[in-house]
Amino acid sequence: MDRYETEEQQVEAIKQFWKENGTAIIVGAVLGLGGLWGWRFYSDKTIESKEVASSAYQAGIDEFVKSEDTASLQAFLSEHSDSGYSNLAAFIVAQQAVEKDDFEAAKRALEGVASSTDAIADLARIRLAKVHLHLGENTQAISQLDQVVATSFLDQVNELKGDAHFANGEFDQARSSYNLALVELPNNINIKMKLDNIAYAKTQAVSIDSEE
Image (cartoon, rainbow, N blue to C red):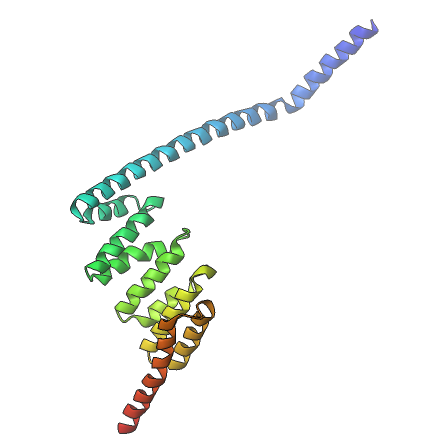
């Protein structure tokens, strides 16, 4: 009898617990299963999207290799701008544009990568700064270089900043940037020559001012 009462009490306790919490358990189960199904659906769609982008990128590369025409990659960029492959395609497009002296096209190709959070954004900023320098857009070049965060690029960043300041006639800033570059590359003859050129350029600038 005691055992029956105990079992009966256990059943009643379970009934009471289910009455108080059953709805929440069902909702939780539905949400859990729904979330699992949703995640699987999202994962499948993500994988499918990546496969499409990968195939399109490969097709663009194949066409580029055959014809050396970046039109296929340009099309890929406009159709898959949010894929990781788009940044790789942008570098190829920019490189080809530079080789054809089309620096405006190179600039357009690199701007999206430079403004992204991708791991290669710093490299894009450096290349974009070089394009700006070719176009005489020295202040824009400095602006791009100021956004580079990777310390492994310090030598390039400071040397290019020196070039931009020199082109702007900002000789003191140029000297400072070149000296910072030499900290990373103390034996770089090219940077040392650029430092020597500053003294000559300043002399020429003073001479021109005195003639005026």
